[in-house]
Amino acid sequence: MKKERTLVLIKPDGVQRSLIGEIIKRYERSGLKLAGMKMVVSTAEHIEKHYTVDPEWRRITGEKTIKSYKDKGLQPPSEDPLVITDILLGNLKKYMASGPVIAMVWQGVHAVKIVRKITGGTEPLTSDVGTIRGDFVLDSYQLSDADGRAVRNLIHASGSVDEAEKEISLWFKPEEIINYRLVQEQILYDVNLDGILE
Image (tube, rainbow, N blue to C red; front, side, top):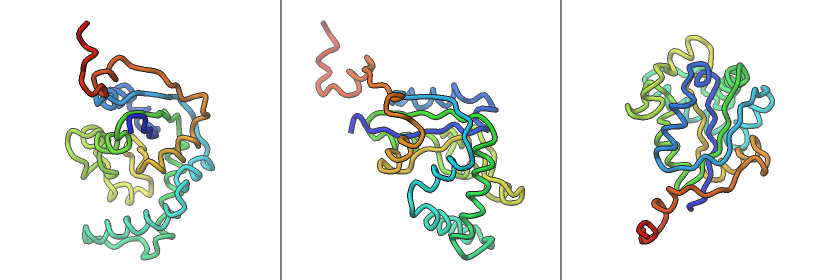
C-alpha cells in the first residue's frame, strides 16, 4: 500500500493559470511523494486512448452524465450514454490537446483516494471549499454545455488503482518513474517512530 501510485494531469487551463506550483504543493503537503513529472503537448489520439483506457468508460460516464442532468431537473442532450460520451470525448480531445499538460505520478499509501479527495469533484461548481477545484475554479457543467466545450477543472486524477496503473503506462516509460526515499517517509510509515532520536 505504501507504494501505491496514481496519475495526475494538470490540464491546459491549470498550466495557463500558473497553478502548477499550488497544485503540486497541495499533494506534497499530504505526504505523497512525486515519483515522475514531465510537460507534454498531447495529441487528440493520445487523449482518446487515455479516456478509453477503461473499456467501460463510455457507458459508465454516459450513464453518470444522464443521471446528473436529471438530478438537476435538466434534460440531457441524449438518453443514449454512448451519444453523450461521443460529445464529451470530442470536447475533451480539443481541450486536453490545446496546450501543455503537466503529467505526474504520485506515490504513497492510498495515493488514488488521497489525490481525488484533495482534487475535489469533477464539477468545480459543486466541489467542496478546500479542494483544488473548489478553491480555484468557477466552471460548471451548465456553462460548459452552453459553450459546447469540456468543463475546465484543472486536473485529471485516476479513479482507481487499476485505472492508475493503465494510465501511468500510457503517459510514462518505466525509466521516467524514479524510485527514491524521502526523509519524511520515516515519520509517515515507521511503525514505532523509533528512528527519530539518536
